[in-house]
Length: 120
Image (cartoon, rainbow, N blue to C red; front, side):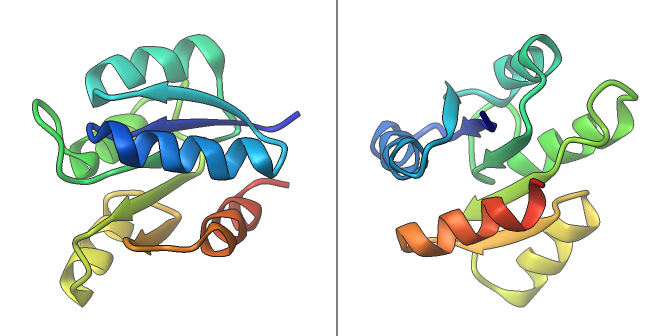
């Protein structure tokens, strides 16, 4: 079964993504903090990561860079899911190592399509 780590500091958003993914048959690991999420990536080796951008402590952009610079985590696909919807945000997110940049609000189909595009 495919495991997805979801990182978002907004509880309602975390639960919405969790619900969409579980309904589609994915196993979900949740974190509300990017620093803690890094440890979860190393420990659980998820098949994909979905992360918000605007979070306290460490942004999703910083989280992407950290993951891509670490040999243990650099190959894990990353989906940024953010309300930051300007072209420059999308370009910057992809340059930080994200494989997909999904903007909020999104549909269940948008989210599942994004995950399917990065996991085999």
